[in-house]
Amino acid sequence: MTDAILRVTDLTVTYRRDDQVDTALDAVSIEVPRGKVTAIIGESGSGKSTLAHAIVRLLPHNGAIPSGAIDFEGENVLERSDKAFRPLRGRHVGFVPQDPIASLNPTRTIGAQLRESFTLAHSPLSPAAVQERILTDLRDVGFTDPETLLTRYPHELSGGMRQRILVAIAFSQRPALVIADEPTSALDVLVGQDVLRSIHEARTKHDSTVVLITHDLALASRNADHVIVLQRGVVAEAGPVAEVFADPQHEYTRALLASSARVAEGRVLSIAEAYARHDRGTAPALSTDVAIRLDGVHKRFGSGRGGTVAMEGVSLEVPRGSTFALVGESGSGKTTTSRVILGLESADAGTVQVLGQDVGSLKRRQLRDLRRRVQVVYQSPFESLNPRLSLRGIIGEPLDAFKVGTPTERAARVAELLELVQLPAAYAERRPRELSGGQRQRVAIARALAIEPEVVVLDEPVSALDATVQAQVLDLLGEIQCELGLTYFLVTHDLAVVADVAQTVAVMRRGRLVESGPTAQVILHAEDTYTQALLAV
Image 1 (cartoon, helix red, strand yellow):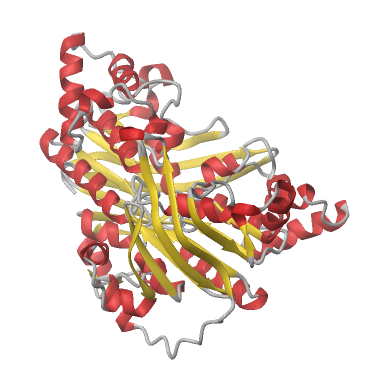
Image 2 (image 1 turned 90 degrees about the vertical axis):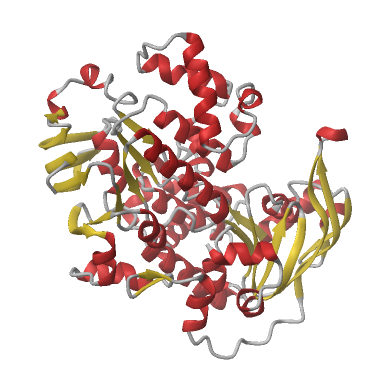
């Protein structure tokens, strides 16, 4: 590449953990062509996010760069001190972080945080010009009423809205380079498309270069011009994305592509195409014993014109020992439905039965007993794991809460669960901050399985995982289900995941079920236009 805006040469990054030094990147060399979108892909722990954080100098305190060079616009920025580098960050190099909840200050309004980005970048614009640019940028990323948005707080916005705020911040100073670290991993497919569209439109309007960190091979294929494949901290392969995906030269790249049902022969298949290509045999008969039953459930938050209907007349049944998937966009009511099943929210009308018990009529002690039989894996491993606890403490927390076994037996159970989710036993003493997003989610799964529940609510359990680890975790959940007879209530935005694991599926929009039935029927013969739109992504 003759015109590279960024050149990384022989970059090595290490992390110190106690007395041990781990190498996250080992003599990595890459080039990023100006004006293009370059995707960096690889498994969880391959070094993708480490590379992104090294470029913008946001490595954690135990991270170090012992050797290598990062040339941005012809200057080795590693020769700058941290203080001297700060004017580059934001003004010349923008960054869209992975988790908008962790990246936005919950105590400050959106307007205050957008204005702060100009202050930190030492923008020469006047306050009036800053306000005008903020409003323009918010409109550019899809907000129709930016003036009202400025007065709101992060918790009042959906995940997609928060992520688009981060896109607006990243492009606010018109940087030459923007690095987006898994910007859509926790979003439903249609909202994720909106976020990517915002990035592409901002890149084109401001003539920026984008580096896209992702584990989604279909997303990389559709959105990038070039691709860099990382494996365990080294570059396995790099080149134009069409060439690499159509004719991968490295066996690791071939394995990555093989793990994705959506990418074949260098092109992205529709979900229906991918589903039809695989012979799934005859589906086993579903149990007549129902583990979860909802009948005419309504749930509303707030009152009057400002209220929100989260569930409207929702009725569904989940056969015991099966996987039921609830699919829908952000704000459709999926998570509220799962919280009603867990007894964390009460229905305004209708009945909710779980394992033969009417959840709405249970006293506090009865509800606690039910929760021992019903566990949950939350969507974001960044929020759901206590950062102060070791993995031993996190996974063992349910065992302690329900006083299961002796301390020795609990320790043995933790070791067993770590092995079950394919994490080394030595990780028991690590903290969540020392793990990748995918590793954190596996810890969350291990915690949910600790007390051997009968029903597990899976709230986007693999959205933060790369394709190969996602396949491994889904296979693992399937094996555990067969062995223990578990019932899974899967909340997801990804119909490709549904196609892999669910026997029945319902599609939810604006609090109502618009389509439901056996998975094959819904995927291959969708009748509702919204379901068809989800399948077309």
